[in-house]
Image (cartoon, rainbow, N blue to C red; front, side, top):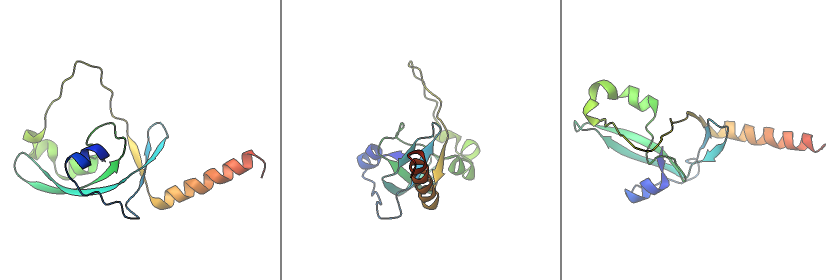
Length: 124
């Protein structure tokens, strides 16, 4: 995923057509709908390129978050070690929390379930 600010600052085309907005669920149980998607090539230090689609979040905690599937499918730790940088900071940092990708049918189910729970709580 990437932040909306990052996508705009790099001139990426953000595909916001119907069907490209998805819902992410964060570790704290909250949900956020994505703005759309950006498809681009990621270029490693070796010059090798890989096609990558980012979910674009309006308020993403990091500029870019690369998913585990992409990292392992491209053997980044073995084949692209030169592309990795160790970042250090004097300020406290927080470990990234995992999140789940919620498909559109799952989101519709959650919306309906929530509606019934609200109605039940008020006695309808």
